[in-house]
Image 1 (cartoon, helix red, strand yellow):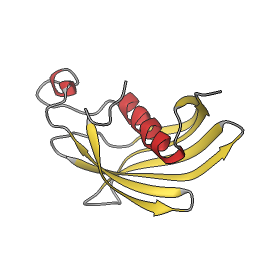
Image 2: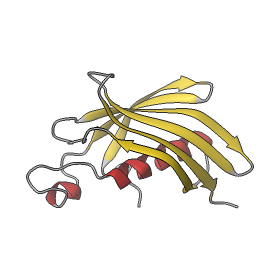
Image 3: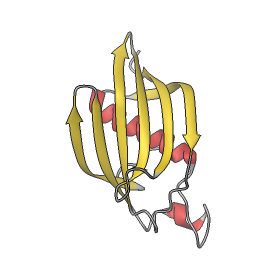
Length: 128
């Protein structure tokens, strides 16, 4: 499932040296608004994991899948209506032997001290 272009779109990207920050905008009309939860939609945690995978694939230039989850903390809910734009920072990107480790932080673009989620993932190169 590719969420980029359906649930969200990348508005901007900044960064270098193993770290980058994306501003993403949510599609207010995505089907998730009708099921998770009707009238008060939130972005499911598994979608955040998929978003990190997709953003990281764009950085490394090849397809990935999640091989390991070291740590995930869902701190605050993301409501596309309340938070139409969210910042996603990827850091510690370390490709090694077909694997890529990354730390991801989702935060409020208007208030960077307000965190939505933090995670440490290991992803595998799908070509191997």
